Image 1: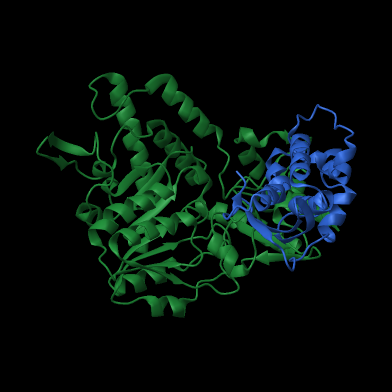
Image 2 (image 1 turned 90 degrees about the vertical axis):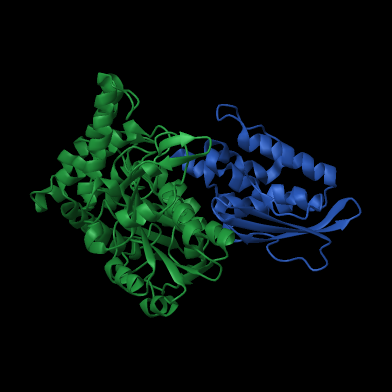
Length: 413
Length: 151
């Protein structure tokens, strides 16, 4: 029985038909794509939008008076409006296009960090951060003399709230936390954390790379100063990311990269900066990427983020139960609130071997440290195997994963 | 799924479950650490030299079945060999695991049980798993001070 039969409005086979890459065989088996936390496959709407852009509208933006440039500019700015509406920002002035979430975080660490951090100030992150929300802060701390503090996680992979509160203090200038952990699947109680951080007078950045496609995000209700995410995990193209910044926060920041488009006037004596958000968008942007992201957001909103989250929750629950029932399998990350990700290890079998064996069964998962080495250290393991779900995955995909992992046990003893 | 059983041959599974010479080596006079940052595999190779010969060899570490079995088989293959002979075995071994898949595996007597790792050639991302211990051995023989990082 397909899932679509039991949840009538959610037609997963119709959804799958929109994703051409899913319809292929790998090593002679039907592809079961469960590496969605690394990147998602793209719906036809996104592929078509990219093709249409390059076929019909391609031009550089903002300067041209000719028709193509006007069309390309309009498409690029329409994408910005689509992002604004998607995350419920107050204004398109608050939506900065970047290459990816990593660049978004680096932008804040550099532009905000170098202007605001002083020796002895503290940047507070959590022990479940992706390297992209650790290393930029290490770099800016080394540059400014600020100190990096890390709030611990417990054995379930949940943030220890009391410890987080205890680390928040008058010296805490920035709190940078992940919304949903890519390695553990933990959903952080970000609204509570943001409220406490702001109460303590800190500026707050949320890394939403693993969140925006699983659960509804309203940046105004959340109250964070910055919210970073990437397009390619949201069914959009690679090379396009977003930094949301509260207008006042962005206004107060110096530019990040200098160059064309981000200036108003340039003389050899000095330059003045363009309005938001262009102040933070130096050089020709990834116009096609923005257009593709727009199509992706339209697609996701068409299916409905709540419906996607509910569908994935069913898959996640079934995967966790069935994997945990396999001899010697242990789930890493058992938070009460999880989204999209199941990480696991198997006694006596290295995750790398699990990955190779299930790949030969057509099942694509990720193995390794998931760019979260401190998380692996916390659990005393070198790596995990990770399956991650998307709106197009089915119960049959989960069952294929479980069967393939069972085969690992058989083969490796 | 014949290619999977090519990779995970019984010899490899056996050496993964019961790695030989898997301990530290008292009186080792050379050692090196190897690390594959991609998958977190770590290995330390200990040598006790007898003149130019590898008088004794052992290893420690953690890794996948391929890296552990390769390290275990390596210790058996190079024990008692001269430095030059050990390095020559590595060269032949490396050539075997990186050969195109349509080239038949040479019936190379000198490789002995190492031939069981020939299936790695069909799994290019696993070549560095199979070669980590060997690069580390090479570093130990050269007494390199820095950890080996397989690229």
